[in-house]
Image 1 (spheres, rainbow, N blue to C red):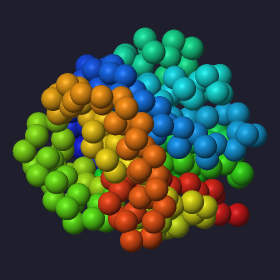
Image 2 (image 1 turned 90 degrees about the horizontal axis):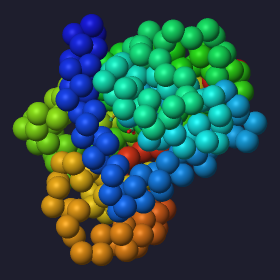
Image 3 (image 1 turned 45 degrees about the horizontal axis):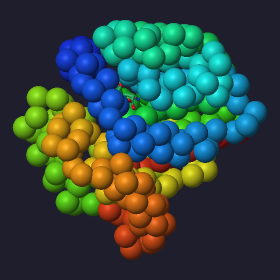
Length: 253
Ligand SMILES: C[S@@+](CC[C@H](N)C(=O)[O-])C[C@H]1O[C@@H](n2cnc3c(N)ncnc32)[C@H](O)[C@@H]1O
């Protein structure tokens, strides 16, 4: 576990500048804003104390902090948090390991995790920490890579196997696997939905596929794909094409 924590720190030290690049294009920001909107749509209006767990370079945290001033961002990578400081000067940033959260019980009304759970190894410890850090009416809102579809599973495997920007140990989840993890960690699942198909491929990672930023009309295409993806994710036999699962849960009484 300690080895993985160190590996994640090293991996994200190299990735920190790439994230700023990733979010620097209009078409990729449009996509990320929509993704953030999807996560924020699950934030109960009464939630005031919010945490972004694995906040990275802080692009989501910046939006969260606008909605809930005083938002807290936590990440294991100090290099990622140093970028966050530029984007979210008002937020409270904490360098720590999500598997050993440094907060008192019931410190938050909502915890967001956008793509951080799969970087850890003890998923139950991560989720149990979240449960303890949440108030009894709190919510855990998460978006994680979904490996339900065998094509996506293989594409991810190849990417993780051959790109230095991924760790082979960081694998995606199945939707049912995530539901089971939530339940084992003491959460009641209130939402398990799908997100991201074509817009995710076109606009999610221009730092990995630089050519995408030259695609003519990429902003208009993302707008169109965002609508198409929502439709696909609403259809029983097609939603398996999605790259992400959005999970929402609350601590069991
Ligand atoms: C895929 S990035 C996502 C960053 C950010 N949420 C975003 O969407 O841009 C995953 C983040 O999780 C962080 N991370 C990995 N393992 C962690 C751990 N054990 N505790 C806290 N953060 C961790 C990484 O440093 C990285 O910033």
